[in-house]
Length: 610
Image 1 (cartoon, rainbow, N blue to C red):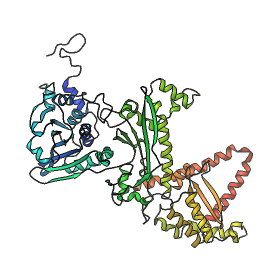
Image 2 (image 1 turned 30 degrees about the horizontal axis):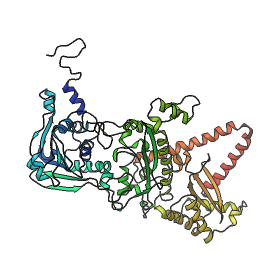
Image 3 (image 1 turned 90 degrees about the horizontal axis):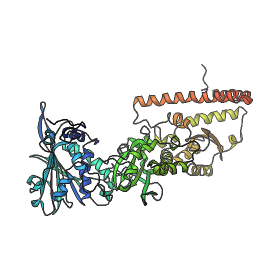
Image 4 (image 1 turned 30 degrees about the vertical axis):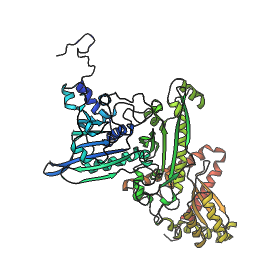
């Protein structure tokens, strides 16, 4: 037994007993098996590998009363430069590594290989070679040995030729390379227990993480399934681009070979951060859906296979040295179906790790992510300006101050992107899509009321005007240029006004000011009732009652109705408060309320006797 000494520690000198340290490291917070495997791919890319194989080996096991395929081993093989015995020994130590001070690549933290491995398995074996696989060296980590105290150091690497079974499974073996093998799995640690499920889900994640490497040909990642004594399968991982700007991706047809989105702006926005006497560049880029994503059949594009694919890629992509750390959803409104139709990315060098708050498992940039909802005014001193706050916070060493201009730019652009992507489907979000403008609707009901008022002696100049072919062309141009309607929707609305002789149209437009709607009389005697899409009234009432419903559950539909009902009550309460505060015009406002009520009753009256 270790004797307790005066400072409270034991004679062994361990502050944390090895068995507790290993348990903590095994629970180090990898989101799933795919993120843990990404650490191995990081090491391969850092070792200048141009090809990596991810090999999942499974066999049938008795599970309850059935035979099921279960993973036995997972291996990664690369054609990188391999490691010396000293480098291998260091790579297997927790918190050590050969890239701790290297800010030129995607490695550095010295936790990837051992931490990620034991988070998923109880046995890690590594073979590496610089002069052919026959001359490989080998070492390992075994959780049982560490926990029992049998091993408290990395076993010295020893010569060991690459096992024949792994040679047979690989097609990329070269003069140099590394094989990492996980085995002795525990059911609860692996996210997926079968080879195909592991490869399929891992491909979606690593295809996104390493999209830039795959897209420009720096690395090819092979996905290999091996069934012991049975079939094998092999394919290349494809790009999964959350900005949807890369062709030949995992996006479903018709956007598998061509990009589904277009760039937002001509160039990336470039920011410079001064740190340590040097300037470091940060790039921000955005994308938004092409018009072709809006189906010609009028159906909701979100219900299409490519729309469902986009739903899985919601968020701001945070990229470090070309490798994605996180797809951060804190910048999105996940309940809003239009969020999937824009993309955003911030890319920074490893030299800014501390500023962005990069975690040692390279899964997030905590400081930057926290700024998604950050308001610098909450930390500012009384009457302190934005520039003064940034200068003061920077002098105090607060990394957030350096990121505020980037964050503000991202917020501003996302706001604009939301408006533009929403405008792409104007006039298409109801049964029948664009064709609904050609069918009888509330516009025709209101038009008949306009004519009835004119016939009863309340004629206005617009009632006597006819809407001709020239008016129709000018109207279509206005819809496209001023109100940003898609070309085909603008055409359908203008055609319907001409052919159905409508006097009223209900439109949407992002407008300045506080009015939640505007009334606009245009040539040809048409009255536009325009809802201000910048006003909460639009989101909470107009849009709530005219939603994309194909993917909504019954509860979500009821929530929309309840929100619209509550909004209507709030609007009338706002009017009531307005009357209370406008004491000088109280009678005038009361008269207006009466007259509007009288007109509303006329328009809502269906003309039938009770």
